[in-house]
Image (cartoon, rainbow, N blue to C red):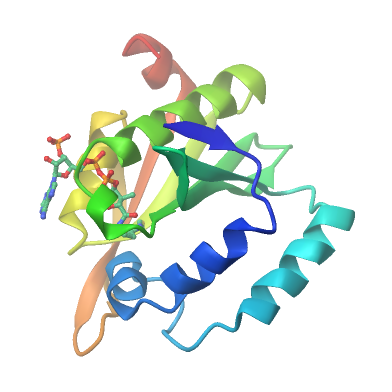
Amino acid sequence: MTLRATTREDLTHLARFENDLGFVVAGGGDPPGPVPLERLQRDFDKEASDPPPDKVEFAIEADGSYVGRCGLYNIDRTARHAELGIGIGEREYWGRGYGREAVGLLLDYAFRLRNLRRVWLEVHADNERGMRAYRSCGFVEEGRMREHVWLAGRYVDNVIMGVLREEWEGSGG
Ligand SMILES: CC(C)(COP(=O)(O)OP(=O)(O)OC[C@H]1O[C@@H](n2cnc3c(N)ncnc32)[C@H](O)[C@@H]1OP(=O)(O)O)[C@@H](O)C(=O)NCCC(=O)NCCS
C-alpha cells in the first residue's frame, strides 16, 4: 500500500466511488447525490494550480491501482491540529488492514513531518469498521453529538475522535 499524489487519471475511479451509494452512505458525509466526473476534474485542476494551504490529500494505491483517498483537512497552523479523512472506495479492499495502515502513515506524516500536535476526525456511530481502525491507531472517543447524522432513513450519533502527539509517541508512533 502506498500513499502518493493523486493524478487526473485517478478521477475516473474516484467518480465511480463517489457515485456508489453504498460507499457514500458508509462514510456518512455529504448528502448523497450524483457527482459528475467533470466536477471532480474542475476541482482537481483548480487545486493543482492553486493548492489550498489548509489541506493535504493523498491517493491510496494498492496492488498498483487507485483504491481511495485520505488526507489532512482544516489544518490549523496556530493550534497545530488537523482533521483526518479517509475513504477506500474499492469495496473488496475493506477490512483488510489498508485503512489502519493508511491512517498510521497519515499520523506519522502529521506528527513527525508536519509537526502537528493533535489529529481529530468525525465518524458516525454505525461505522464500526472505521472506529476500530481509528482506535487501533491510537484515536480515542472525545465526544458524541447525539442523533446528529441522518443516515439514509434514521438518525445516528456523530462521534468525535482524536489523538494527541504524546499519545501517539507513547504508543510507539
Ligand atoms: C473506514 C475505512 C477507512 C476502514 O478501512 P479498512 O481498511 O476497511 O479497515 P481495517 O481493515 O484497517 O480495520 C477494520 C477494523 O474493523 C474490523 N472489521 C472488519 N470488518 C468489519 C465489519 N463488517 N464490521 C465491524 N468491524 C469490522 C476489523 O477487524 C478491524 O478491526 P481490528 O483492527 O480491531 O481487528 C474503510 O472501510 C472505508 O473507507 N469505508 C467506507 C467509507 C468510510 O467509512 N469512510 C470513513 C468515514 S469516517
